[in-house]
Image (cartoon, rainbow, N blue to C red):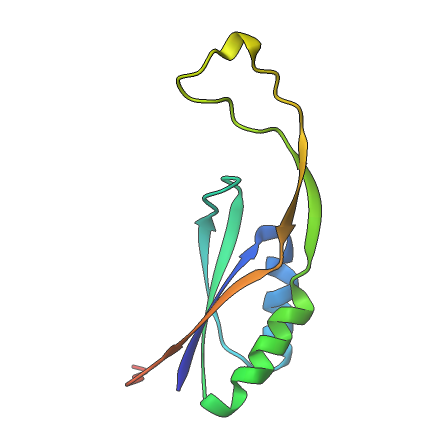
Length: 109
């Protein structure tokens, strides 16, 4: 048995949740926050048999797309803020960060 932990952008959360249900995967959703852009994320935890790991990864890959987004950079700490002009920069966001972990035991009460 494996535990698949997928961290996705909030924009992809609903689409992934629907796709997991369509493919008979049970998931627990947790609200989370990204460290780089400080934006909202959703973390999905999916327990599944070893044989179905590839299928859950396929569902995640099909549901979560990366995209370009304009963001204003954070002002430098300790520097001279008077000369700092925060020009927006384009960064790639979205997609999914996925961890697959072995599970020794599973209990459902």
